[in-house]
Image 1 (cartoon, each protein chain N blue to C red):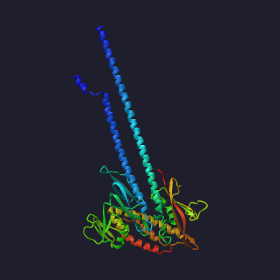
Image 2: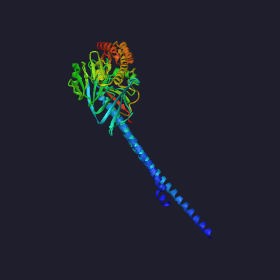
Image 3: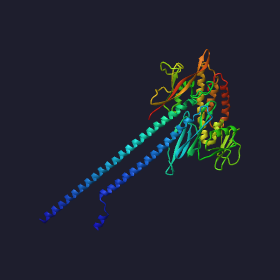
Image 4: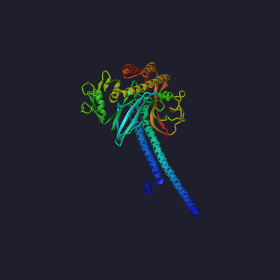
Length: 308
Length: 190
């Protein structure tokens, strides 16, 4: 009986070693997992920052538009977020990459104050196209960047001639004109069934997912086509925040150059523009603002001393 | 006699038991020290790995800052806060409106972290000046350095050639004056 009991008994040293060994192993696995997650988060953050930096060359001078593309080594989701906090608001990029067939989860965000990216909530794929176009209102505000994935084909049906020529000159891999295939996203300029996006070029509105947004200038039309309503309205508000600041800058410049004998007589109009831009709520306000903008543009063009 | 022998045997057994107990205690102590040593070793290795990882991240961050500055400096002149636009007759490439930059300098606190660089400086290089004079609203345009933030350029910097234009008064009127300059962008090394 005693012998049997002894057979089952483990020496204390062994028991202690097993428990301690298991604890050390658990700690090692726990920290290794944490380290892998940290590494993944760091890669996602670096990728986000790199994408933001890659957007710098898209700043245009006199060109009508610029296009470029980049390829990621693995399937990637680029989340496009935006906020209006502060003076200029912020463009936020969040990256999620496929690792072991699962999307990495990260709450790390990379932000930029001087970028305006128009895309859906997230863009997924390996190859991404970037196309930029300057937005003037009435002076240059910024270059708007439209980001799309090569996984999605955008087909423009019956666009106006100037849009058709511009798109053709871009030669972007995922844009088709009139020759639409079944799985492509159809953007219709003269109505019709099976259209994902409806554009009214004359009355300046775009309907996407049954949501209507308004635009002024071609740069904002592309923005409305390629992005969802939430992103479009948020980025538009950020653009108006910049209009407000630039109008104040030009207003001070008007004062400054008048000392050199250069009179522009635009101070009052710029103050009005700055106020309207700071009161801007959503795209439905664009039409009224555009009338003011056109008048300022004409005044500047015919002024003795052009401010921009 | 028998009792004495019994007591002696009992004493021997007790002392053997004590000795065995002491041996076991020693073994546990040895094991504990060993475990502490192993844990410390792994902790040190872990810390070493973390230090390497964090220095890699810091290096990558500096590299990204440098790349940002490099790409930015070549395009900054086209940014609406700097560019000449059509204010100087014909639109010019890589042209900075000095009057606008002087105003921007007054509002620079609004542009904190706007371009993601620590400082921006514009230096006139032709016609060359004898001394370096920092521009203020009082001495402008008789100066040759426009520093957007008052702090000195520290860390690394990258530059690009530009034309720096302004409206110059002349006999009750004005004319457009453009000079050769260099725009310098500095970034902080992490």
